[in-house]
Image (spheres, rainbow, N blue to C red):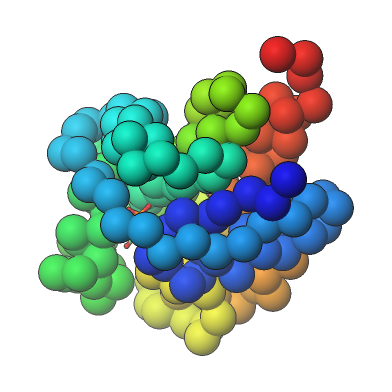
Length: 183
Ligand code: IMP
């Protein structure tokens, strides 16, 4: 089967194309709008999104809801990451972090997969830190201000390498493990 990757984010599309291809699976991008319910829980956003997509008659797909959870900001922007990215942006996050000693942060990615009548929901994580300034031109979103290794931002890491260590790569491997299990 060919998995439909439903997202409006070209950065996610690139990462999933590489991940599916590396796993020897076929995937295609499907642009399909669905409501992202307001919730304090990535899994709930994904679960509700999947219901809506199924109501539209689509099967054999994945969706992804992700966020950046900053320790010193009590988990902000978290589930409000898309809004924070659109409004205050990376510069705004850096501003909020001015003077913060604890720069720890975590990316989380929740994947919902509809396959052969099954629903699989998995969440991957990646620990790292908010950098002191933006750097790098690859990737998307918060990549220029997040470093997983304390040396390079995600926007300075080649896509294949990001997939090896990122929240999305982690979630994708959990998905592959679930796909390998019996119903
Ligand atoms: P959503 O999952 O599309 O709602 O993403 C929430 C916000 O987090 C968006 O602004 C994305 O750009 C950002 N985001 C999600 N995943 C990543 C990532 O892997 N790197 C950087 N930013 C991300």
